[in-house]
Amino acid sequence: MRTEICKQLGIEFPIFAFSHCRDVVVEASKAGAFGVLGAVGFTPEQFARELDRLDEAVGDRPYGVDVVIPANDIPGAEKDPETLRQELFDSIPQEHREFAKKVLAESGVPELPPGVKHEGEYLLRSTAATARRHVEIALQHPNVKLIANALGAPPADLIQQIKASGRLVAGLSGKPEHARRHAAAGVDIIVAQGTEGGGHTGEIGSVVLWPEVVEAVKPIPVLAAGGVGTGAQIAAALVLGAQGVWCGSIWLTTTESDLTEAAKELLINAKSSDTVRSRSQTGKPSRMLRNRWTEAWEGPDAPKTLPLPLQDMISAECSTRAKAYPQKAREVTINPVGQIVGHMNGSMRTRDVVATLVEEYLEAAERLNKILEAGLYE
Ligand SMILES: Cc1cc2nc3c(=O)[nH]c(=O)nc-3n(C[C@H](O)[C@H](O)[C@H](O)COP(=O)(O)O)c2cc1C
Image (cartoon, rainbow, N blue to C red; front, side):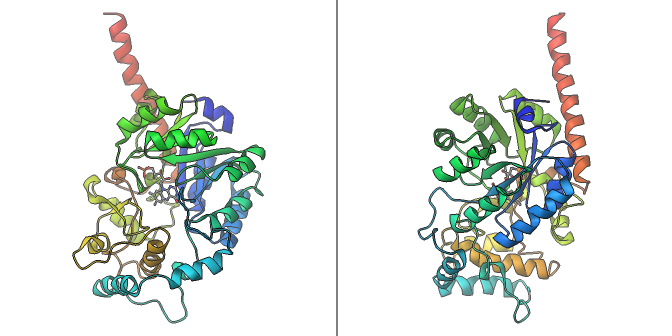
């Protein structure tokens, strides 16, 4: 399984474990995979603390971080994030605020206690204003060997700065033409994410997208994402020309994952047909479990979802309330996850997930070898 990228990053397996949960990242990196911590849910101060604690736990193992800077970022990203957040928050139409509150009330989710803020009231997600601070912090942590951007290539000055520090830059893409743009911008690794994947996702299926992107950007290494949850799928990704895989969903139900037990249970019971691409969380299409929240925003009385990051500020109220009242919010909890959810039928330790993927990969490679050998000696 050792591909060139393993040597470059000093890892055993080309399995990239994307998670917003520090403990998953630690355990994945300690198991020989490459943990990547998503920064978008943290204020810069929280993120700095997360990375300090990650460093303490991970020893000399490398890991990566992932920031969210949209290719078409909003104007004003040079402003202080808090000033910009407040300006944007104030610009949210009353109709949208009321609609979100109505959906939550009709689903029986209590209001937050007085004085408790929801995330949209203190965190500006998905703009360079916050993400540049995340990158600055990441660059102060020597074990960070890779910085990825969720929505394309990072701005040119950041690419330069990251590379000059000896780290690799990755960009996610759901279309070959986007991947070509990232390649031209100087990205070192392209993550090609098929529509099956959890979170922001395009429309092209993984089996079609991966080889298209490999061809479009060669010789730049490609990581295959979207729907990977078994070792046989890793074998398929490598056969299709990828140098490794990038998985997000399968870590959500691990014992280390910080999702609430209620959210984990929903994922464990879900089938692969239970997800939908919805704009209801961020304003951009992203894959999550279909539920009363996603359906409500599709309904005839729903206002049109707002662009990033405004919709994010509205859905933040739903996410914060769901964390506070996980059982009562079961019908509306925003659960980003990919179609591989149908395969996530229990809770395992992260390190056991990595070990299982490796074993299954070997079995798949063995099956392929047998076919090849049978052909040779016919
Ligand atoms: C809960 C969740 C949150 C995600 N958040 C981000 C994010 O903040 N940044 C990012 O680059 N990708 C994010 N993704 C996408 C993953 O990086 C990855 O590309 C995707 O999960 C791969 O498909 P899979 O879910 O089938 O493994 C997220 C995915 C999930 C499931």
